[in-house]
Length: 338
Image (tube, rainbow, N blue to C red; front, top):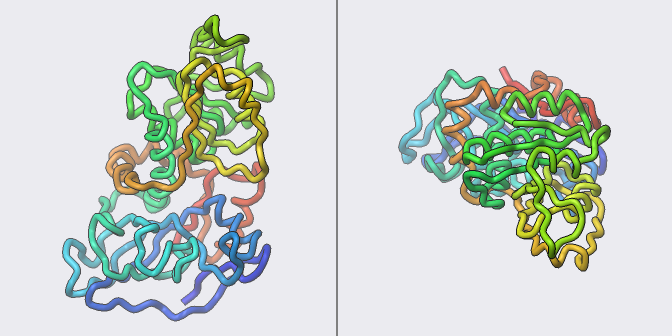
């Protein structure tokens, strides 16, 4: 069968590999959709999973159809539509250094257990939306790490897929007000579509001043300067200006969460931040959220569908990787397999 692999630094290629087979404890899946992640571009550029180099199967945002069920597996039937925990495969992380990748016609789940690697979803959910399950779990984990509560005022930097997923997550958590900051008007429009209360174009507006208008004055005698009343900031952009902005304007006791991958070091003046007692948290992956997000995605799939900007057929998977890696060309690209 055909599969997309990193075959060298800066190169992803079609590779012919053996179609996997399922044993008594396994489930064979036909991949029906796979999202393209920013880490796919990172792996390709590096020539493998950093710091290692070498041939690497790509694709870790799949939705699939069950085509064969081992006789020792319970709770699954041929024809079921499923989403996957790609970090729970017993042969390594799917599409992130493991033996298989979801930019392939088929994958096999070894030692398959419903609720461990596999969750069944209704058939009415479009494949391209089902493929959002993995990145939306990443977004929900970031939301959970910032511990939002009712009445909180939130700012999300970056209206890409993770940022939009975070907006959906914060809305479900019942926060009072969500602002999204970006520099791309079309992305800001999407943020409003998925539930942001307001947006700020940081290329045209003073972020601090606008947040004071939206979230009130959060300054106190012990912390000098303009301090919006924002309770939570989330960096889903990965631009060096974001940490510098947040640490310079955050009120006393605010929380700053980072889910974005920063590709260059960021300098922060800890001395200036000290008096704010800023809570800094980090988010990576999805320790518990991979299937927690599924029910919400199924119930509200039309809202999640807004996140997808482009769909390409499997034959054009290499084009999809290029499109997703081109700054400003697309927001969320999903490959569809017939």
